[in-house]
Image (cartoon, rainbow, N blue to C red):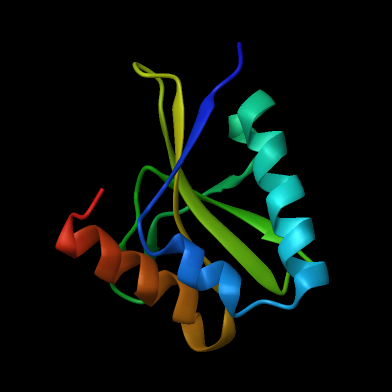
Length: 103
């Protein structure tokens, strides 16, 4: 079964700040999620942010994270945030996006 990929509205901003070579790697990895959405690791509570039910996928030697969730009922992978792990930035960003419920 192939899953559709959907993006949080601000993910394109995440991609703009990445080098082109890293962006290409991220997009390639996202393409793999359409076929194998469960390849990412489950997230739980990160720095007091509840990301239960969400997953992370590493890119570029684990420097970049893709935070996403899987909607089995709709066969959709929703990409929430993409960025560096530095100071847990990516997890804070994902938590902010989830709390504004823009998806």
